[in-house]
Amino acid sequence: MKVVVAGYAKTGTKSMQAALIELDYKVYDSVDHFWYHGNQWNKIFTAGGCIEDFKAMYEDVDAVTDFPACIFWEEISSVFPDCKIILTVRDEESWCKSWHGQIREAKSNLIFQLMQVLSPTGWKLFRSSQLTFALSPGICIRHPFDYSIRSKMVDIRVFKTHQTYCLQNAPKDRLLVYRISEGWEPLCKFLGKEIPEKEFPHENKGATLIAKLMKTHPATIRIQREMVEQNTIMKVIVAGFSKTGTKTLAAALKELDYKVYDYIDHFWYHGNEWKKILTTGGSTEDFKRMYEDVDAVTDTPSNLFWEEIHKAFPESKIILMTRDEDSWYKSALVQNEKVRTHIGFTLSCCTRIGWKLFCFMQMNVMAGLGVYEPYPFTFGFHLNELILRKAYRQHTQYCLQNAPKNKLLVYNVKTGWEPLCEFLGNDIPDKPFPHENKKGEIMDNPDLTHPFTIRLQREFFIMSCILLGLSAFGFYKIAAFKNG
Image (cartoon, rainbow, N blue to C red; front, side):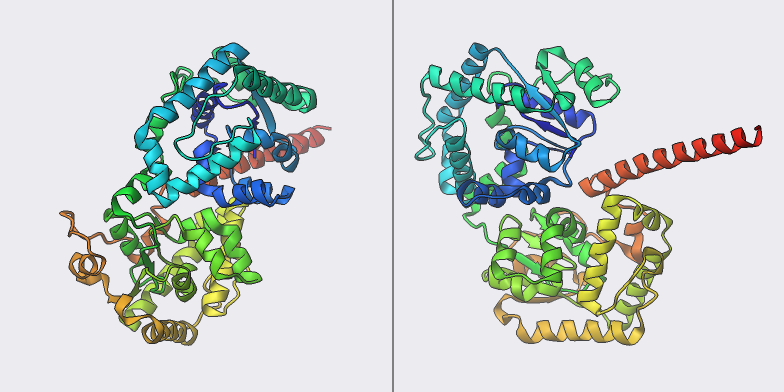
């Protein structure tokens, strides 16, 4: 965590978010806090929390802005003692006028209000907002149609109290008091960044935030889809082993407009939860909490726990991917060899996030095959044909025997769209059926847009610069020593 923006909403937090993204930070703003950590925040609001909660939530995020993170800037910055704090400020009269304008927009937007009533995810968003505003700025919202404007005097008092407390208690060597009108220069100087060529962004002018979010954010897109479908349950569990076409099926489900979590998504969004499940155990409620906002799950480790996930979402459908055992075994060997010999994978494990991914892979191999892989460069050395074939057969047979027959599709990707769409009740797309990760090509052509890959590249670049600097310094000292 590098930056905590402690300023209240309507002090330029949306502009700050856009600016930090432009500076290549991974930023969680108000709706992101709900979308990715809504359950954790609700727990903090209702039952309390601890410092470790904030660490678990934001250890893979670069910056946080807006409610509710700005209320807990002190706790978050204490977890990440090296992070910098930005207090966005604004004239109190101007702020109050803008704050009341934002409330008026929420109150006058009938679709936004209905979204919170007719969609389960929308209702969760309302409850999250209700709890946040009750804490600070101390507004009681009784129902989604109750966005009332209260006394200007009270709002300004709460606003001034928050700003004064931050000014008095934030470490001065880590604090920037900042107005959005100042632009790039003081911000980049404080963060040690070069000034971008682009103009400084100015977002949410005239309280247009809600209309924009309704078009772009995955949370509001899901809410609107729920209003149409009236169906928010987990829809599909792909129980097939890796290398049975899971990447292809993930691409097909995305084409059918499902929100899919594949292998790297399980790690990126729920790595800590999976670590707990794979080491100390878990419960049905864990799976429900992790995947209640997801339409489909594929690949490991979710395929190993298809039965437990189905208990959490009993109306979901199960797809068991099948493949000729000999063909599957050869493909598994090719994939393992790709991982073991790929220099990029080995080097990536020198980064913090890359090592966490390798440890995640270790746990998955242990859970699925009962094999321990100690090092990245030995990955696949300890596998043998007997173990792989036996694990594949056992997994497939167990699923065939125990999955509810009325909810199970035994599927081979070679059969294409027709049986899949018939089973799911979807129209057949005009596009050809996708075919992904042939011969382990995903190792050579990773998704460069995925937040994990972006993070990995950034950490690798930083690590390379540090090593280069240390090497140059070492050569300089050796040369200086020789020259006496």
